[in-house]
Amino acid sequence: MLSLAACGDTSSNTASSEAAASSQQQAEQSSAESKAVQPQSDSDRSSEQDKTAPDSTSQPDTSATDTSGDKDTIVIYFSATGTTKGVAQRIASAANADTYEIVPQEKYTDADLDWNDKSSRSTVEMNDPDSRPKIAGDLPDISAYKRVFIGYPIWWGDAPRIMSTFVESVKLDGKTVIPFCTSGGSPIGRSGENLKNASGSGNWLSGERLDSGISEQEAKNWVDSFK
Image (cartoon, rainbow, N blue to C red):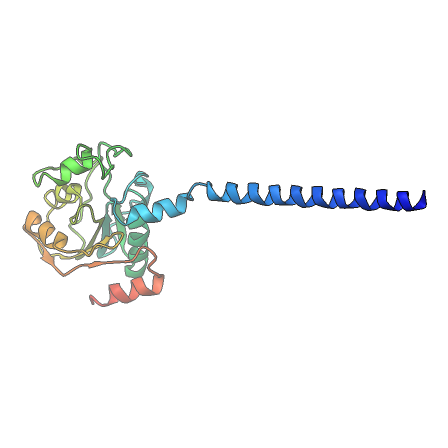
């Protein structure tokens, strides 16, 4: 009987060990399957989208506008996602400048900014050199400023058409104009030259694409290069 009892205990322990191992294996397999089907994170999707799509999705914040008139430099910008806005604010800080945000009268929706859709609003605008989206609110009085930084995202290799609306609506005579852009990798190209031609006035300098993560010191170094 002692021998039988011992055998019984061994069999029971073996069965328990096998059950535990099986349970652990199933749990590990379930965890692996869960990770395999886990969707890509929002930040990864945004990073991938920035390589090809226009600066998009969120709407401009009019609270960023500041034209106190007691400074000789102003940073004017259009930003749809906040990327260009962040860079513009760092430039304004480095240059001790006022700011003015260009806000579209008709806000862009996600569908409007769908770069894969050939009939989306932004695609249609960029395919039409004469397109001039309207700007909401009053334009700034820039008569007192000597230096004007103009920032925008790159859409389809150029400045958004609303930038043409702006430069054609203000007088830049006698002012030094410095364009800058943000993009997922595209250079500033001829966008600054195209805006200069649309404006027909102002002393336009060669612009530059600035990284979205530009530091305060890097912004200051860039601004100081124009003194």
